[in-house]
Amino acid sequence: MANSASGDSAVDRVVRLLAAFPEGTPRLPLSDLAARAGLPLSSAHRLVRQMSDHGLLDVEEGGAVKPGLRLWELVSRNAPTLELRTVALPFMEDIQQVLRQNVNLAVLDGPDALFVERLSRPGSVVNRATVAGRLPVHLSSAGLALMAFQPREVQAEYVARQTLAGAVPEDELRLRLAETARNGYAQLVGILDPDTSGIAAPVLDPRGHAVAALGVVVPVTEVRLREIVAALQAAAQGVRRGLETLRRA
Image (cartoon, rainbow, N blue to C red; front, top):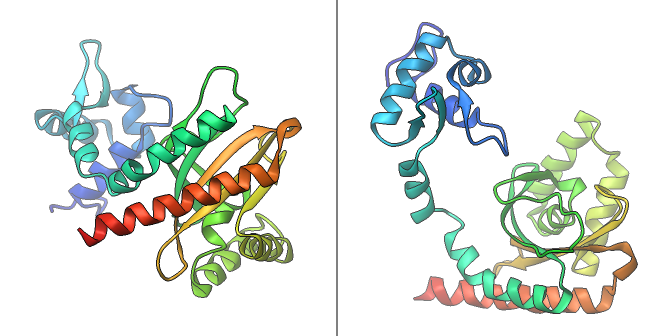
């Protein structure tokens, strides 16, 4: 792809435009979009026009820019998490019926838990996880459940980077991961919200590595740990079997 005067390729600039929309902000004025993407206004205008011709972006009458339906269509029908979500959703619904609280499904992406599904209901507690949202591994029970069941080299690289960044003391992080691996689940109490507890169990592949995590967020006053862990681990086993069946087909 042709490079700009700054050396960026056209693909680089397209990705920067798409990534410039902040979570919860589905539309931006063109000038704001260009600024957030770090592009000259003229370059952003040209790219937006070209992308809107393909339905990847949509320009409203007032000039605001938003992601286009074609982009949603392409991503949704071939999403890398589609199989996982399809298999996991019935188990998530069962958990929610029993606990009547938030249930989420996450995968590991670098140092973050990336949430691919969330079920909530009126009256449930605050849940910081949002679909397509991220939380750092050390701030999320799902993240800890994912990282604690990764290969040693993945864990070592993660711990080294977090320690270097000063995010969390190395000894504390290693202890959390070891406890999670030993227990088969992760629990964090009052980390993101003082009144909630997050509990998560890994969905393991045949090698014992976590490919996903099922989690719940419940009031700290309603933590029936044994019951919750049993439900999550049973559901995680069901998701594992469902994924294995799909991949054998």
